[in-house]
Image (cartoon, rainbow, N blue to C red; front, top):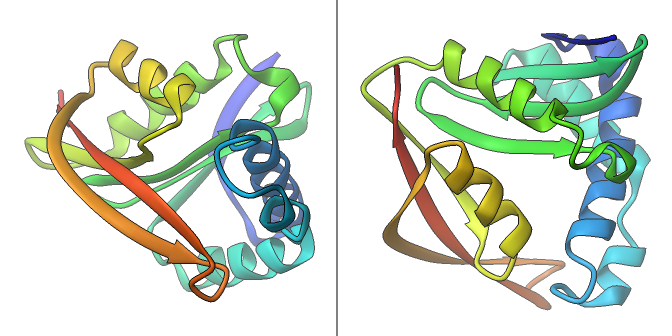
Length: 158
């Protein structure tokens, strides 16, 4: 049975693991392999514990039979992150998590940024009603060694 609930600081280790494993699977071939190999679940867990503890935005987790298998982070009108363990892709849990996020957003519309080369994610968001609004940005990570080209998507809120 799948459920979605608010994340707690105790969920941070699972969120860190999901964040790293999903990046390594989704961005394989899109981001340099050495960068992906150096991602640290414990570092991500520390950052997520701080974010959840500080109440900086909202974080939801998706559970499957009581095990945290996905998470989403969002603010009133922006989806910052939505990731599932790769073995849970394509099972509908991402849509359930996404829909819960949208229910909790406020205002007329919301935005998200997606890696321009991530066709799987772009297709997912289009199926959920998001539209490319032609805004672009470049972000650098790994002390400037990795450049990420991102596209902004927008959707009306219910």
